[in-house]
Image (tube, rainbow, N blue to C red):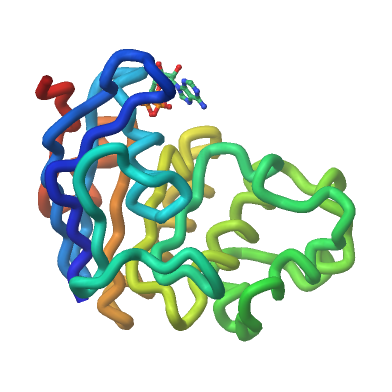
Length: 201
Ligand SMILES: Nc1ncnc2c1ncn2[C@@H]1O[C@H](COP(=O)(O)OP(=O)(O)OP(=O)(O)O)[C@@H](O)[C@H]1O
C-alpha cells in the first residue's frame, strides 16, 4: 500500500505558497528522509500527508484511496513536543491505550517502565513522555509513521534506543517511515532515500 502525494501545493490563507507541485511517494517498509530549510513547510507537508490538513492543490492517497479522517489513522504523525500531544488530564496508561493495547514487550523495547503508567504526564521527563507518544503511534494498523523531529530534544542514548525499536518494527511489519530532521547524520544513518522539499513555484 503506497502513500502518494501528487502535485501538492499549500499556503495558509491568502499568504505566499509554501510549496507547489510537490510529488512524493513512499512504499511499505521504506525509510525516507524529508529535508529542507527551516520554514519551508516540512511540518505542514507532514500534516497534509497524515490527513490533518487538506492540500489546496493536488491529492494525497493511500493505496490509491483518499486518506481517511475517522477512526484509527494508518498514517501516524509523531512530532517534537510530546507534552502537546498528550492529554494532561489523563494518566499515562489511558493515553497509551487510547487507540490500541500495546503488549508489555513493546513497552520494554522502548524502555517504558511499568511504574510510569500510573503517573500524570507532568510527572515524566520529555524523553519518557516521547516514548509513550511513539508507542501509541505504532498500533497494528499503522502503515506509515511520520517522525517530525521526533527525537530532536532527546539525548543520544534515548534517541538511539527509540530509533532501534522503531526500525525493528518497521522491518517486521513492512511499515514505511518518513524522517523529518535537521540532523543530517541521523537522516544519513536511517534513510535509504532523501527528498528535499522545494518551493517550486
Ligand atoms: N497555522 C498557521 N498559520 C499561518 N502560518 C503558518 C501556520 N503554521 C505554520 N505557518 C507558517 O508556515 C511556514 C512553514 O511552517 P512549517 O512548520 O511547516 O515549516 P518547517 O519546514 O517544518 O519548519 P522547521 O524546519 O523550522 O520546523 C512558516 O513560515 C510558518 O510560520
